[in-house]
Image (cartoon, rainbow, N blue to C red; front, side):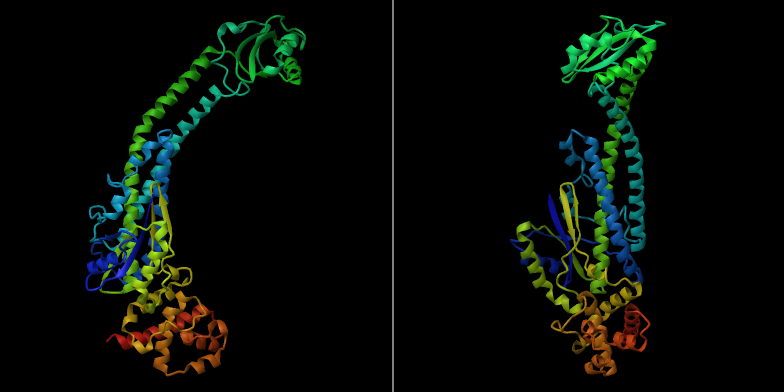
Length: 483
C-alpha cells in the first residue's frame, strides 16, 4: 500500500525550478513527483471561493463511490481474491503508476470548459456510476442471496435443511386415505430410545414402520407411518421426548421444481458474473481517474486562492514512509516557513487520508484550516480577497510572526493584515483599542476595528462585527493599492 502527499508551493522563477529545489531537499527522505496541471480557466474570485467548498464535498463523494466499486469488486470475486488487484486499474495502469505519471484527460474534461463546468461534469459522471452500481448490485445480490439461502437449506443441520434430496419415493406411503408417513429428526444420543418407544408415543402408529434414511454428526432422520387423524397428537408427544417431526410432503413435481430453481439461479449468476466484473473494472477506472482529476482541480483552485495571480505554483506528490513522516514535515516547514507571513500556520500538513485497495492518498487542502472557522461565506470571501492583495501591503503594516495570538491562528493572521492596515490608515493607537475592550481572549490589535464596532453596536454578533470591519478595511485597502 502506497501513501502520497499532494502539496503545492508557489513558483520560483519557474514552476520547474520549484520542483527541482524541493526534490533536491528531499533526497533520501522521499521520492518527489511533479503533478502536471493544464492551463485551466481561473474565472472570478467568487467562483473560486464557491468551488473551494464544492470541490471538497465532491472529493469525498467521488472517493466514497470509488471505494464502493473497489469493495464490491472484492465481494463479487469472492474466493478469487487474488484477482482483485489485477482488476483495480486506472486506464490499464497500476494505480501508483497512474498517479505519479498523471496526465490531464482533455477528452473527458476539456480545459476550455470553466472550472464550474468541469466540476459538474465529474459530479454527473460519478452520480450516474453510483446509480448504476446500486441497480446492478441489487440485481446480482438478489440472485446470490436466494441461491445462498437454498444452498444453506440443502447442506445445514437436519433440524433446518431441505429434506427433499435425502429421501426417496419408496420411503413413503402415498395415496392412502388413512395412512401417512412422517419424517422425524432424532438426536443420536436418543436413537435407542426412539427405536424402543416410537410405536407407543400415541395410538394408531404402525409397528416396525420406522427406518433410518439419513444421519449427520448430531442427528438421524427416521420415517414412521401412522394414521392421519393422530398426526397432531403424535407431534405433541414426540416433542416432549425431544423428537422433532419435520413438516414435509413428498411431491415429486415440487422437488423437481426446487432442483430446477437452483440450476436456474446458478446459471443466472454465472451469466451476470462476467459482465458485472467487466462493468466494475471499467467504472472503477473511470471513477478513480475522476477522483484524481478532482484532486488536481482542488489543488489548482486552492493554490490560486492561496498564492494569487498570475498562476505560478507547482503541485507535487511526495511518497513518504512512516519512518520519515516527521523529517519530511520538518523539511517542508523549513522550505516554506515564509508562507506563514501570509497568514497560514506551518502546520498545514494535517489533511484527510484517502485509503483504497493497494493505495492511499494524503492530500493537503492548502487553506482547509479556515473551513471550520470561517462559516460565513462573506467572511471567507473577504479573507481570500485579502490574501490576494496581501503581497502589496507595505511591509511595516504586516503582522510580525512573534505577535501574541490568543484567538485561532488561522482566523487571526488574515485579519491581522486588516487590523494593521486599518490602524495604519486611522492612526489609532493600540492603547486606545485595549481601553475600549480589554478582554484577554481578544487582547490583540488584530481585530481592532471589529472590537470597536462591537462596542458601538453590542447587539450584533462577533461574526457580523468581523464582516463589517473586514468589509470597511478591505475597501480602504483596495482603494489604496489598486489604481
